[in-house]
Image (tube, rainbow, N blue to C red; front, side, top):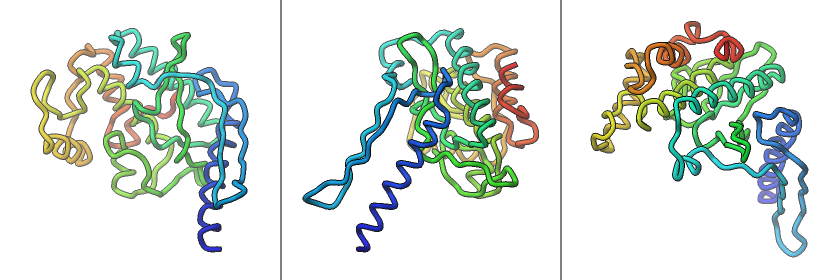
Length: 231
């Protein structure tokens, strides 16, 4: 009974993610959802959860065989801002924006996917659980403080920073210098502590200013919304 309850809870969480995808369907910059089926196994404990979705390629997979142009970086920023506009209208924080959760369609559209840890905003518009990927995480999430949708702006800014910085996160040794294991920890500590980020190496002045504003340590200094960032 305990195991059954445990796994049923997992299935409910998965179905919750599917329902969230359904509520966001129709936006060209969110991975498209068609339908799903949950099938309880007959002879053993467990369920098969089948989800039919749009066929897309993850950003890291795409980068294995393609060079990424400056124009594509800008288009990615615009497209994901459009996805975040819909999330905002639905009262949803994605909370795990990173390159692995950004996809590209055969038509070259960038799409946001994997809403597994997305959270509907509470009545106050704030959330307080530490979820996400530390390398892309906003400082207030990392410290376990209350936060709002500005954390998605921050994480998108970090994705853009990496793409415009030779694939290196802020404070990492510049490409093509060798990266050591300790470099990642040091870079994360400096960023979370609020040290001013250097401009991305290949961004240029104007694009750097946009990315650095999105990555501001203080949430109040970031763009007020995805619409503002897109503009």
